[in-house]
Length: 463
Image 1: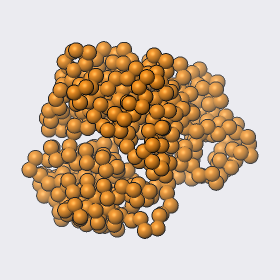
Image 2: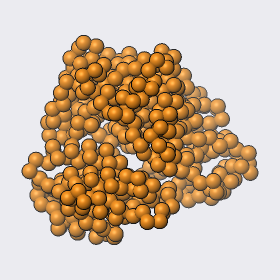
Image 3: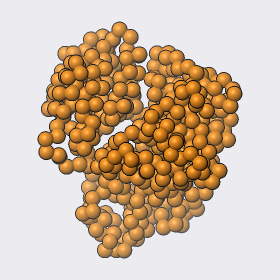
Image 4: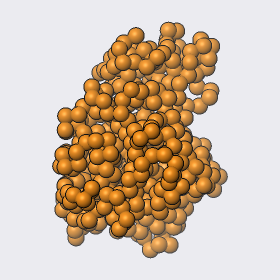
């Protein structure tokens, strides 16, 4: 077995290896010397990146893809019970490991920082990974999205810090034991797994209880759900450090000054005033950067050194990522799919648009989320000047009778929005071209394949 590999993970097989979380774990194991194999539904740039690391990637799912000598099979919660490779693993007696257990094993013996929250996890984890790397600390990291730089969602570093995105959607973040945990916000989401806010709070309390002895919980002082969680975990063990614009925040944000597609942030931390640049637009991203700063400081990284290093973070793919410019209009890709995220990204774009208009191409994500939050999604679209709303992207879900994107359209119109339903994605580039003028910002928004429309819109605008 290669040095540094967790037990029984020297020959792992990943079902759904192209997923953001799965591919990151596979990359780290390959970089540690494991003979990694796996399968995914279709070819992708991620599959090619894995192959470049020596990983065997099969396209499609078939029992024959699982090698007889595989040491374990790694799955996520999205893998169905009738998957043929999973059935073959049962026949062979190959252990099945959830991706959260695999990630927890990779953190063992290191100093983990786990980033949790209903939204903002990928950005904050990325800010930490980039800034700690900028300081030469060589962290390992596993992120739910690809960085603009260094161009990967995961890395095995030879330092002693491991930064990980901690997913609450399926309660998998209960597997981690971080030295420092960040909770950015606590809101009702993931309706297939949580029936109420009370269940969400219980889940986050369990996560906070997993912080190691002497560890720290870094948590928002501004967001209502986070403040309630702070009340619930008081006295339970970890040191609590709050951050934000609230007067009682331990790390207090004194100002956020927009500067085009950047912000200048000033904070008060341990009696010291620090001013630094955040190289992405929007107040919510500035607050993510402050969370990253507070977490690094809690782990012992000097804040005065970490603050300027945060400016090295230039974004994550799909998080307000500039795709290009044509005919004087910029096309930007946003992963926002929860109403709070949508509102934050649209507010950030409003401050960056100047006299230009904001045109949104929005794709609701999941039937269950649209059923619960479709009205709020529509209300968020009222912040745009015009929107096109696509059909729901189902991802792992089966349709729910009566739940369509019309829920979003109707709510948007009720809120006074200029919104048009579009059922054929191929019509979008021409429709956008007819709506867009020089100086406008076009956002492709959602967690599904709406991201594929950006290049097509740019091509149509350029003609």
